Length: 489
Image 1 (cartoon, rainbow, N blue to C red):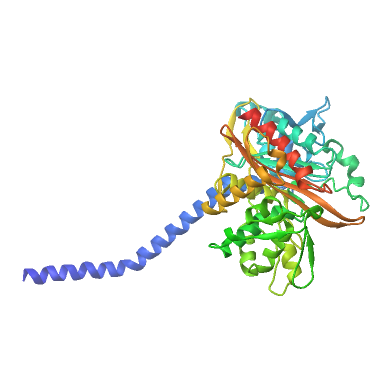
Image 2: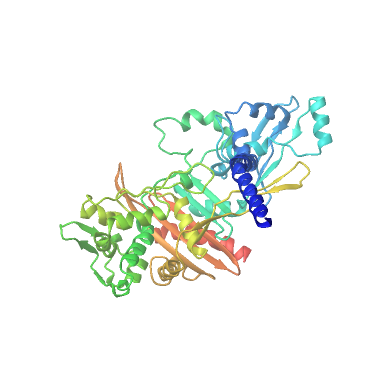
């Protein structure tokens, strides 16, 4: 009898559980929806709201500007890069004390907004002064002092990079591989944001071929030349893991393939007998053209895309995607040209910088950051932007191999500009041909990194019509490295 009662109670409980299951499922579902909404709201408020609210097309921006004097943009070493001056009538003028030097970074705020003026619009039009002061200002119709936006850019390094590039067209960009902080970003020719309205017609004239408004560091798209051999050599090693060390090529200054196409080394230099490491260090086009004809097209394409070609870059300001296109139907000559960084392949200095930055940090890439922290009108820091890891681009083994080859480029090859440096530098130079109205010309590249006394830096230099990367771009990169490492380290 007792067992029968127990059995009955157990069956009753099981029955109630079965009846409650639909209710529990609905309850859990509703809870999951609310949790999702809360998570999305937090994400929006913390990460997206400043971009949406600060968008120049948002009418709320005008209301914010009526109540707040736009804050300053300040370099990492405390130099004011942009400020708002007010005259006795209350007329506001945005002033850029350094003129064109920081224009690729700050951008402008007449004729629209670009650069940090656009990216930090919400922050610059916010005010975190004392709440009593803000309330009093609102009641009396006075404007509150806007927050100051501090950058990761170092003003002295920016000046050094600009002077090293000189009057050449091109770009210089540097970042700290350990944190992703962008240390300098130079683009030439540039423009003066103080006179952007007056100069607008000439800057945008269809006959103007100077491209002053183009930030060449991030928006320039160039054939990468021999800097692309970082990818080509890696693709070859992946396809020949057990035999790449026995690679040999006899360079006579030019290479003629089985179809009669001829590819020459820069300046027709004959490198002689080359191992894979020597061919990389000496930037031997013949050796890499031969390699390009042997590589798997699909494997090459896959590697390029894993290294962010044809992909979005983790960068907040406007940039141009790098392009890599190769198909099985392409001719042998196209495949050879692609392997030496020519053909249809294009790359931005920013992208090249990210690759060498990852190699400097054992294969891992930190997201490039340009905003450092915010200060209120009283000079108190109330928000900091922290470094974030993007992900691994290179395996540990690949990183070690590429670092060895880039070091050999310095000690024995085209990176001789770094040879007598007080620190160990790793570099890859490039000389990329392009067709101009005057005929064939050559862009000069250098992508490099180094560490000294616990301080590290990665640099990319692109000099338009600069001829040799080793003789033109590498010395610019060396000047930037010297200024940073010997001062910081």
